[in-house]
Image (cartoon, rainbow, N blue to C red; front, side):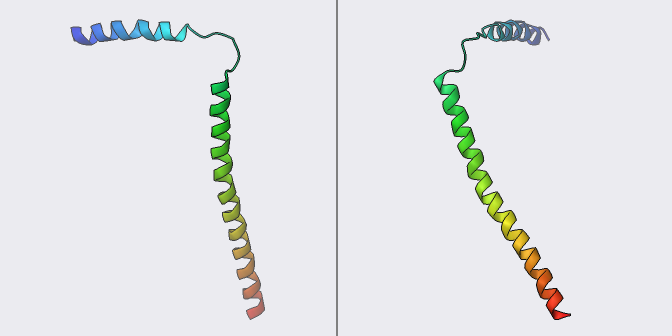
Length: 71
């Protein structure tokens, strides 16, 4: 139990020191590169999703037309 208290006593202050280092200098180039990379991933996932949804809608619409013609 004493070891746990010692570990918690060491870890707790270090998180406080890490949190206090925020500065308001604006976003650096690496932040913008990261956000741009994230945007490329999102767009890359949206293109196949849109193609899948349009194919699904076309498939559902085509099946309804065939059923109407059979009756």
